[in-house]
Amino acid sequence: MAEVGSASSAVVSVAPRSSILTIEGLRVTFGGVVAVDELSFEIADGTAVGLIGPNGAGKSTALKAIGGEVKPTSGAIVFDGVDTTGRPTHTRARHGLIRTFQLGGEFARLTVMENLLVAVPGMRGRSIWGALAGRRWWGADQASEVRRARAVLSRLDLLDKEDSYASELSGGQRKLVEIGRALMARPKMLLLDEPMAGVNRSLARHIEDALNNLRHEGLTLLLVEHELGSVERLCDRVIVMAQGRQIADGDMGQLRSRREVLDAYLGG
Image (cartoon, rainbow, N blue to C red):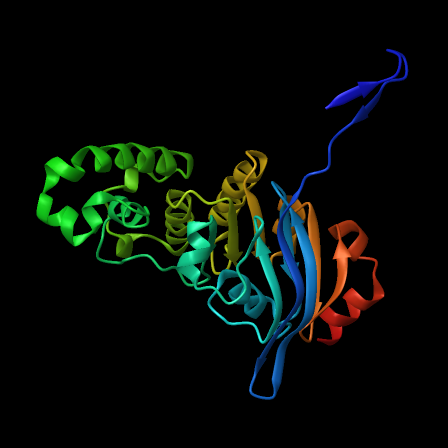
């Protein structure tokens, strides 16, 4: 950051953040149905962006395409300087692009701690050779990851649940476990599909606070969410979709006065 001018009239110049995600002309079709139509936007590193719109707008399909679950019909997806268009989910995850799901992917019959540990990429004990070599080979590696998992659980207020089975948790707590699993994969960016859906108000605010802390620490977020209050509090910028197309882009204060946004929600 450079400062120019006198003490009485200083001008502070901040270097613009570079883009970590670039979407160009993204199009997804299923048969003759166009789910996402020519979607283009960029996301700056370390920012939080909301993707909103009425039901059927194409938001979740766009998120799936960005995360690698759905193959685009055309267009380009560039993440952290790498063209990931058409590449599988695990390849994108290795680059640091991690997605969480509306319906959690936790393992119900594993403990919370075990759920976090299985999300760690490249742990020695996870391979067949690591298992055959025994604990002496992978024990130190696991001990380090256990300490890191406890730090993640502590920040999510789940440390007292580390030995509980995932099946014993509430819906909101399972959402937090899903976020914890994502953090164990050392993400550069999180794609979040309705993190507050179906969660009571108290836990929803807790999830929101956890995501807000991650955003302030520099983690990039792109979230699909219907709870517009949470979107406004969390996101630096909001992209609005309707009928597969992007119709607006700005902050929530600006978007509330846009006729096309109101029409999409009231008429969509």
